[in-house]
Image (cartoon, rainbow, N blue to C red):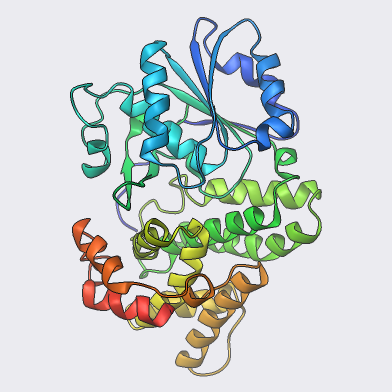
Length: 386
């Protein structure tokens, strides 16, 4: 196992009715900006409930944060936060709202003479301070409620970039599975697939004898394969929703990634597809991952065989057959969740040259746990994903 430092300071309030604990998590004298996405938090009554819980506090609101949050939209919230001297942010929604709110938190304190997009270009290296934030999660998927990362799109240039900073780690996260009951099937499926691939990005690399992390990751993968399909047919099964919600948080809060090599090439390749073609994040991951696993089967051989045995119970046949079976089982699981796994299922013509040009522009030319996925290999993966 590799050396690691793990610090997970986010307070989690998990279970039914935990929104009622919200007021006690925020300073009484705070000037609060509530951020949210589309109209679902309005239609469900959640926004009204939050207003009621925080009655008497100074509240401002900013809605309309997109599923792939854009810099152009978020800058409106940055301007509002600066003008109203906001000193606490409350994100109400899924990972996109949380990611966007993290950017708002950092950008509002950024040098007004500079373009805050530079935060993304330096992967957060210039974040010196940020507005503290908390969250009420409505869509389990990205784990953003308990980590320090965010991904933002700049629509005008077709860029999708990420940044990290401990200064945007949420102070608390309210996780009530009941709030996920009314999610559309597509969002449920996206969330399950997203959490599944987050886990694989930290698990399917090479062995370092990290038994705890491996078995923890395998437990999450098994839970998602068992509960994901149930969530589509039993939308108000509390136990199913609770297990999915907690799995998605644990998939990217640092625990399973501590002390082990990580990949993330699937995400980097997928981000460029989203930026160019507008696909859902999870859709791009489901498209890229099977092709990438096949391309890197030799480098990932030991862990692929472990994955085949422990997650998919594939114990017979040659090593090559078991690896083929694991990749096929993964693809079949995504399809069973309603997420297509070929790029041609979503776009008429994939402009691979443009995707590669963006990878090069963003410095993504040595991806994967070994840094051996160059532009030639990326082309091969994109072509195989078609």
